[in-house]
Amino acid sequence: MSYEQEYQNKLTTAEEAVKIVKSGDWIDFGWCAGTPVALDHALAQRMPELYDVNFRGGVLLRPLECFAADDAGEHFSWNSWHMSGIERHMIAKGCAYYASMRYSELPRFYREHIIPNDVMMVQVAPMDEHGYFNLGPQASHLKAASEVSKKVIVEVNHNMPRCLGGFEEALHISEVDMIVEHDSPIGILPAGGPATEIDEAVAKLIVEEIPNGACLQLGIGGMPNAVGSLIAQSDLKDLGVHTEMYVDGFVDMAAAGKLTGAKKNIDRGRQAFAFAAGTQKLYDYLNDNPACMSAPVNYTNDARVIAELDNFMSINNAVNLDLFGQVNAESAGVKHISGAGGQLDFVMGAYLSKGGKSFICCSSAFTDKQGNLHSRILPTLDNGSIVTDTRANVHYLVTEYGKVCLKGLSSWQRAEAIISIAHPQFRDELIASAEQMKIWRRSNKR
Image (tube, rainbow, N blue to C red; front, side, top):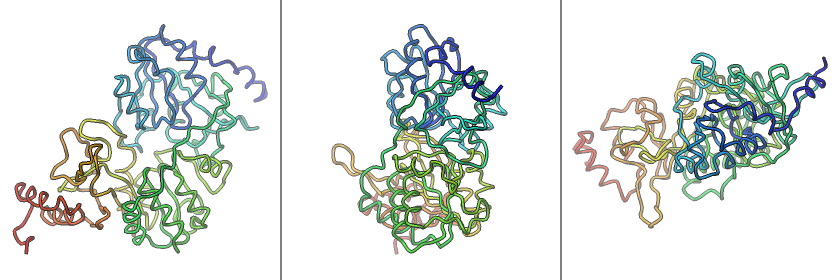
């Protein structure tokens, strides 16, 4: 049987495909830009007759119809590996929950811990002549999820960029049970507004630490993007990319001729990533681009792989941190924001790299809706805050007031260094708290 004939035999409608879902099922619902659209709509129509259907996914770029109804939580649950703003709203509705992890371990969760998975539904690019459906900009953990799923349904979208890879970036038609065709725009992650003065100040402090030939990982957010923009305008050259998430900042650097990957110890000349989200220019750049390498997250985020890359520079955001050097990048107290993702993987991997550095950056303070200024540097993290990076792992901390290296510092030295980059308005309060916690020496005041 030809691949085309097999394709036709498996082709069906979204409405027919979702009939296999029954109450109590676990459904893997793709990831980021690969979250299905037509299948979501069809499942939403079945909601009244289904109960205890549990979805897995993450980094949603558009609201799900399945969870639009006020009583959706009585029928469905959304279990996220990493949350976007859309998913935070779903938490408030009582139908979404976070599954904690180090992102590099996710494929093992499926393959070794036998996560129950009745059905997998995911958007893919059209089948090629060899019978493969490219997974688009989200290799991540999807091949592993497909291997343990009882049924695999692909939603073919002609707008899905075809992301070339090293491995596990595609599903073969022999691994697919049903095919649905539906063309829809790829989910967009807005680039955000222009960098603020604080973003630019932090970016400048980081960029001056980056040597020619360095390999880069950028997290999501205004500050990492500001770093990307500043690199694009700099004199740096022969930079490489090995990252969890591919963002618009890399496209800007590539357009400026900064990304050759010529000095990479592995995957030379290629920009490796686990998933990507951004504006249409990002998807256009990734499509059929042999300079880019779509790979599973247990490769991109493995600290041992990262350590093989000399001069590895990891740049990530924080929500807040404390005087012990504990970094929270996931929550505001008990209010969940995003997830652990791969931040700790890259913090550890970068430090293991020859010449490598990891930077955790944030503004020193923020202003609330009432106009009150609050420090992001706290004596101790608020109750319920999640420790994303332990105090033993943090390398550089950066705010608009400076950068400090915490490696090798005792508790009083650490407190002194962290307070030195706090907003000036809060430094005396932080010193008083450090004294109460016995991590401040009298000699610090001389």
